[in-house]
Image (cartoon, rainbow, N blue to C red; front, side, top):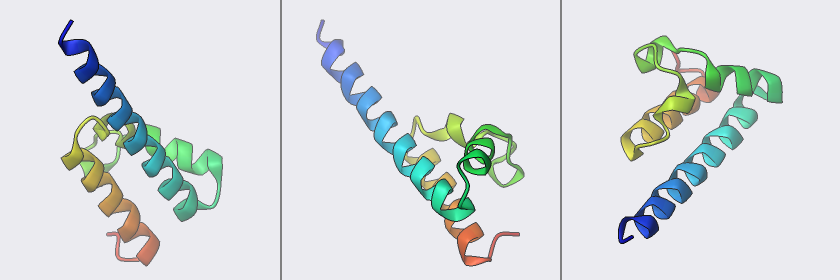
Length: 77
């Protein structure tokens, strides 16, 4: 069962990343329903991936966070 602690760590990391992205989306959209919808819909800026599907990796998390920051700053195209 050496992989059980690793699995817990992976799940904890994914949970933390998801919580951070949800908080940032809520800040950007100022509306929980809009933020939730944005997290669950395919996004062209993310290669038509859903933001929620990208939390499993640090790169995916950083990419989604970058898009949210660009939306917030008005530089999203």
